[in-house]
Image (tube, rainbow over all chains, first blue to last red; front, side, top):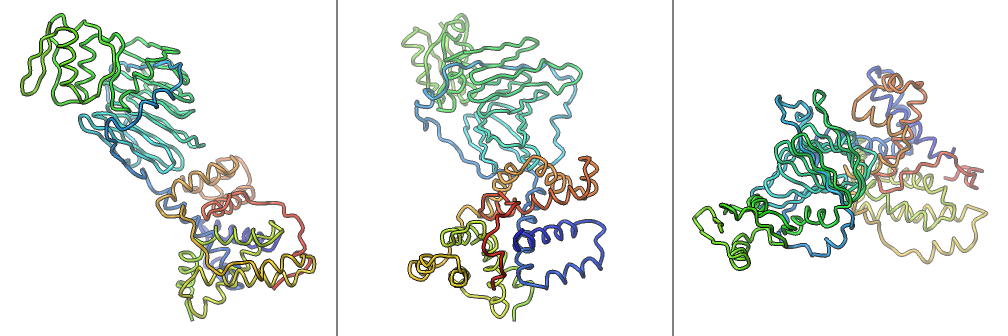
Length: 321
Length: 189
């Protein structure tokens, strides 16, 4: 053992013991004597103490988010779709109706909250290197510490890009727990319906509700898990469905033979002016990709391509055949 | 004369941020890589001795000068070191100073700590977390993990040293077995 290492080890032991409850004035005297013996002792001790106290500050912090950036829509390129793997399974989970407040929603320690307004799109970066992209009307709470990384998805939809560390990362969506083993996935919550789309790595989806737990599933890159009511739908290799699910990240909505009434609901998540579909028009199947905020252009398209009638009021655009 | 508090503050706030650059400087200019930690500590020691009289105006230039002189002295005294090395130090080192590592600013401390923790061996990490996050005493940690207090102290020591090394810009790997170098044959002053 070289001299420096020996001194460092001794300094570390002093540091550890000084923190103990049974540290006495006699100990303090001995320590000060050792410290005063040489400047090498001082530099070694102060060096360790600084870093160790630094870790203290951080351990005491509840949640810590490094930066929040608002993303403008239409900013990303379409290349992103190409880079998504071809096989995606979309898994959406719907939660059974919760009759009582869930205690898993109440974190013990103070947390940070992030939210987006109607039509909002925001990215939150965390100190561990993970990022979360929030879609429209989304509320998340975070508690990122040295021990656990917890996120509560209270409402809406978010895409997670998680830095792989030995510290577990868990997303709470109601009573569902999405434990991250891999890296990139999105979670969407509508009340107690939950949908999870995995684009990289794998996640485990379980249920913290002890009285009425849904089955645990481990899903991989390309999987989509969807639960609505009591039924669970697991789509593997859904291919384009995954890209469709995540098109919002590029400011787009993508549909493939989707009933108009569903399309309208999607648009309405992002826009003040709501689309209202009357009569049979709701069952018309729509395909294509559309800019999220351009409701008017979409309505015009319905008129031009499908011959539907459009009626605009101050708050709505009514569509009927 | 500078008092202990001022000296310590100067050391922690002005000198330690330069550790990364200083270490790189030592490694570039001394063949035996295993000696780097010892040499660094000797440089810190000299820096403190000098600063006790009066704190330097420009810490990085001051530290650089000390480092340069110390390495030159070591090279001259080491019988085994080749002539080349002495010549290198005397003629090729540019006059200058150290730059603090840009990453090591407060904002990134949490990320750096998390990554540093990640790099610890599992048992060591567990001990550090029990101590830091759950605030357990050494004995409580020992009980929780079912090991002896000595083991806990050893693991905690390793964790503190590794984390410190990493937080100051190093690799976070602590050498536990040192290879014999010529320096151990006699004490260098």
